[in-house]
Length: 328
Image 1 (cartoon, rainbow, N blue to C red):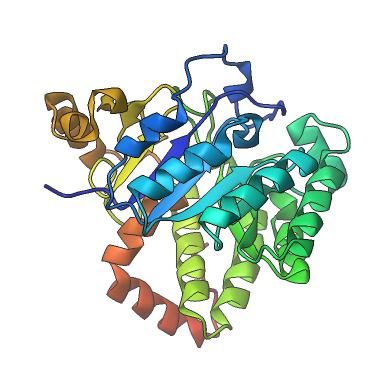
Image 2 (image 1 turned 120 degrees about the vertical axis):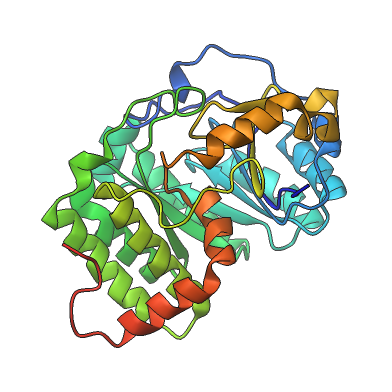
């Protein structure tokens, strides 16, 4: 049976932001796994995103990370954060880097200060996130990125955040607002983003990524191509591998095929193998196989890796193409 190599692990649904594109903060506080429970994760994982809510609200986040590293010693870990708690983040990251020197962090940034603060409902949030970014760089953390969530409210600022990431010497990642009843707990209509203005922003960034000779930049451009195809109603570029190559784990230990659709597979407390091979998991995989409800990097990454000849051919053809890269 296929084993998962990629995972998003939400360690808490507590959050210190009130984001317009996400309803997690409206959730009642619920059960949270103790650090020891994460020792049950499968050793095959290679890419893990620790997220929330706001993961740094957990005092024991370094202990969770240590358990993850024991269970999955070859996994590369990225922690997603809003970056508001600078001192706490620095303290936790210092401890976590002792276990994983290459630890990555993705800091949410949704536009210039006035736009970001309005979307996150935290006055001064943009300044606090930027302060955290600079502090992490001063600490010598190199695996950093700014993460932009594209919504109708900030669609005109995609390129600005990309420019900021380039200016600060960090990576850039992006997503469109997605609906999810069990994770984001919000509704979204990506069709609202199928505009010439959004395509123009994406086109500019894709062309700049294709100018590079780094395969990672080409892969990022290909992902953004897929993002535009999804926004314009064309679905996924490649079939979803959720529940096979990818899993989502919630704070209470519930395993799902992904964080977009509520296809439940079992609970980690019962043992990973028991959950992964259960009848519920088989049914959930069948639902995921028929699903085209998202195009997010968490599940797109493994799909793109499997289809790398197609992705590479697309990048090489567009790299030297004088015409538009993204279809109108």
